[in-house]
Image (tube, rainbow, N blue to C red; front, side):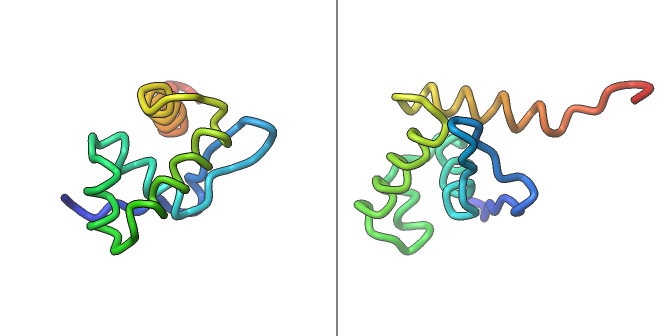
Length: 88
C-alpha cells in the first residue's frame, strides 16, 4: 500500500457545510483505493475501532449511509476538483 495523504486544500464534504479533516481525507482516499478498515488501521498505526469511528464521521459529513456511496461521492468530488476545462 503506498502512502496517500490529501493536502488540506483538497478537503471535501458538502453535507451541512462540514468538511473532512486531513485524517478523514486520508482514510477516505484509502477506502476509495479498496482497502478494508483493518488494512487502513495497520497502515496508519491506529486501532481498527478508531478507523471505524472516522468512517462513521466521514459518512455523516458526506451525507451517505454506505461505503459504496461514500466512494462514489469521493470519486465524483475528487475528480470534479481536478477537472480542467478548455478555455477556462
